[in-house]
Image 1 (cartoon, rainbow, N blue to C red):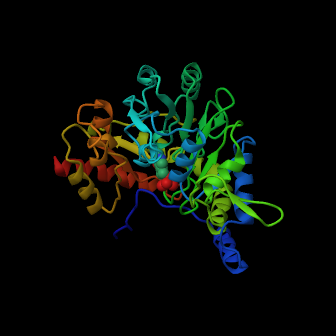
Image 2 (image 1 turned 120 degrees about the horizontal axis):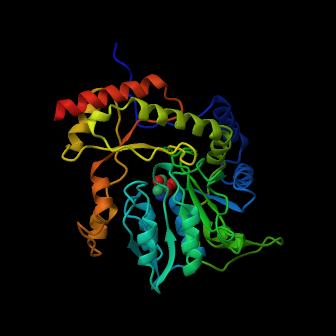
Length: 376
Ligand SMILES: *Cc1c(COP(=O)(O)O)cnc(C)c1O
């Protein structure tokens, strides 16, 4: 018997959510409305009462955060080269200059020692990301940011449901907290199909955030309107918000299940294969992805093809982004960030999602052994 193809991830949408989406579709109001407001309230509650606004993508929340932080031409923003390219693209989008800092090979997140030495007089903000759901050290991060007067925009696209020392990501760390950006893309731990949310610092005008989200339009009680800033078109629909509300009910159980599966991988992967495993953290990390590094010299393309032949989907998240043409054209090259380049060239994402049974971890582990042998 051949088992069905196992993708590296798959969303879990319950029947109540599907029924609620159908109700919205029949209601006569399918764009932003009451469901968006309810979703924002639920997210705010989840984030310790902080103001939260939702958007049609995680990328939009990052860009709006930069605009609200008044980052633009002449400013530099520090981030990691080992992330989804959106994290760096938004810096270019607002006219600022990205500065990359290499990763710590243990956490695979931005190296905080190197971050501190990369700060200059033009550095306005830092965008750390919690790769695969493992949070960057929030204590150290905010100590650095406060010392140097930097704004922090936490790219928490992958860390919804994760915690730092018992406090969920999205809560405020450091001096009153700063921006936290979530993505609700289909592959993320909480999804709205596409979408995002921005947790706002206390000193930011929520009205301005809303205007930047929708064409800069301000409406007055007498029915008149004005446009005072250049906003975009970034609002979330009630259809998407309804999916998000349905997902919120399961976030704790999703995270618990992901941690169990990750632990099973640690127990079942044959150590003699020579794979470099992720950091074994089962209290902070939400295990958005289970990522291993292939042994030096392994042909990743052949490995992925061998796994696919055994019915198993493997992802690549991510090649070091400073080596993409867009960034090479801005002067970046091989050798600039050796750790990110080494990890980015060897990393693969193995299947892990809440509905996956234990037996599928075992299936992946035996396919790992046979695939690596086959392509040797
Ligand atoms: C998914 C992701 C984003 C972008 O989110 P979208 O909702 O796809 O726009 C940004 N940064 C990181 C680290 C991500 O994983």
